[in-house]
Length: 237
Image (cartoon, rainbow, N blue to C red; front, side, top):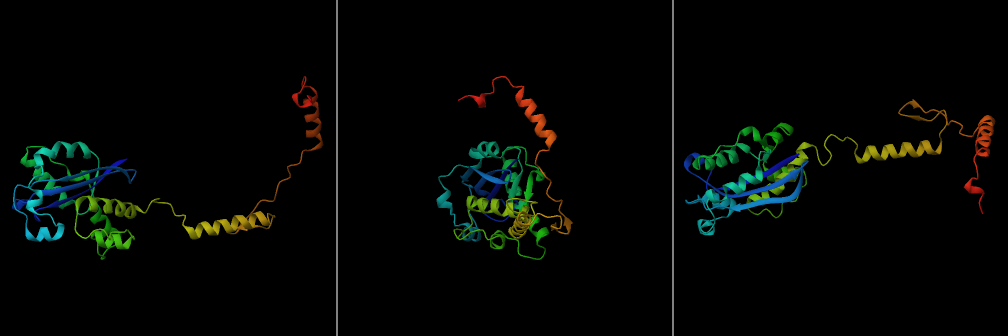
């Protein structure tokens, strides 16, 4: 199952005000784990960047002046994401910006159904708790000390880790934790030490050891079978 962890940085907070995408970071996930394939693009927004946005991500118009415009990278971007689910934190924000860029180019927009919103997942899983990316990294003990400012690729990478934890960790649905494993190991050791009719696991009687020695009839049948073998190799010197 292929998914894309995705994040964008922008010139401001709303595409309705003419704000544009300036950075895209995307990581390929297979079965919820990063494959190493990634897409990182800086984009010239062809407009000024709000001071508040610069304070968040640190990118200036001067830095982006020589970068390609969205029309130059749109095919590369769409080819990378394909039709696969997009894992996004606060999906409505990023999807609105992506679709605004696509509309400018008369391209089909992406359906919201293609996105998986980890913000909504976090709010449902931890109602009333902080659900921003930094708070979730702290909750799941994901190292984000390198995140001085927002950056699309850095945030997509952190998001991939958060997404796995929101699903239940590296082995979602597996309830066998360390404590229960140790308890099971202790029971198995106990059974090996005293495998008697009175041994029990969780109140269940354990069947006594069955005798495995051959009977006299079985030994006689085996001897007769061996005697009928012509020139057996185990009698050779």
